[in-house]
Amino acid sequence: MTKFDKSQFKWDGMYLMYWGRHTQSINMEDHNPDCHPSWVGKPKPSFIARFKYGSKPWKSWVNCIVDNYPSVESYLDEARKTSPLEAVQKVGYSGRGRYRRAA
Image 1 (cartoon, one colour):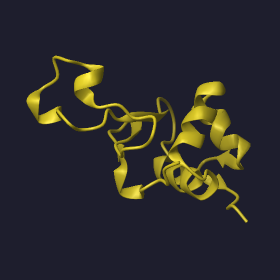
Image 2 (cartoon, rainbow, N blue to C red):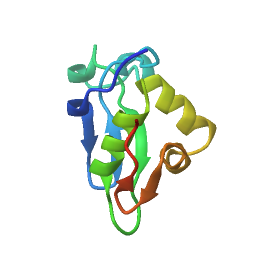
Image 3 (cartoon, rainbow, N blue to C red):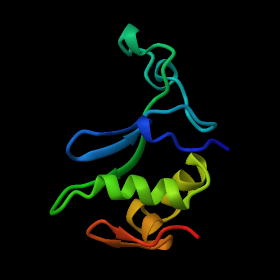
């Protein structure tokens, strides 16, 4: 299990991705053999959430995920089972950047 590193989150205006290595990550050359040489040896970014409409409280999502999920893998598994929104709501996220911190 891999703990989150906040510096590995990247937000491009719509998508929140995690660029850190974890036990479920694969290298870019394995995912896409024709990738640019600068990507070789780097992990494929993991999808965390998409902010399509309205407010984009990505920093609150990062804080909520890091505070409430013990590992990258546990969040990714939960988000795959349900959805990214349901995964953060399950641990107390209530929208507009509000959530209860883990005890």
